[in-house]
Image (cartoon, rainbow, N blue to C red; front, side, top):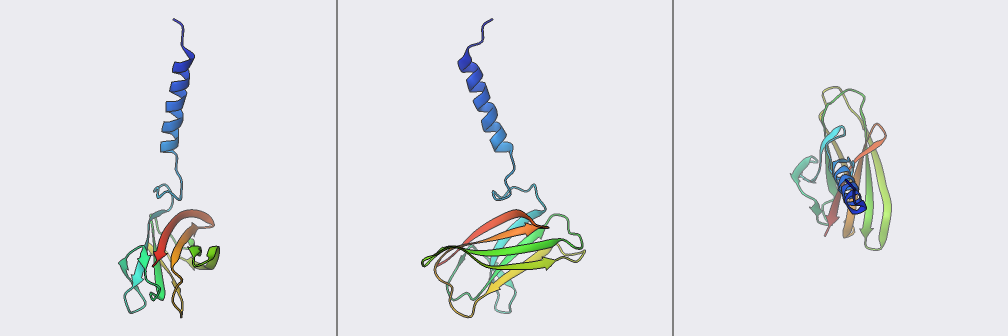
Length: 143
């Protein structure tokens, strides 16, 4: 039986597509890393996270990011990298890195960024690194 090259090419294409669909990408929201969930939240008025959202107003002077760890353990280093993606003429500018080292029973790590003035309208993101490895990124907007 003779095999046609088109069938071989089609089979390889299907294999590549399936392999790409099953691969893990830490920025795509997959749950293969140490973070099970990463969300943004407004301030509740007492300096703590309130309602979850990815849209803030310029006058939301404190913006919260919460990272839920799958398996909490003492000494885990979480770094929150806060970025302006594109806001009123500023592009791809890091605002600040915030580091936190966990205690043994900490499952939710809370980082926040504050400003005394209104935030410029635009697109932002927060990257979460666990022990130096980029694990998740969440985008948010100020409008």
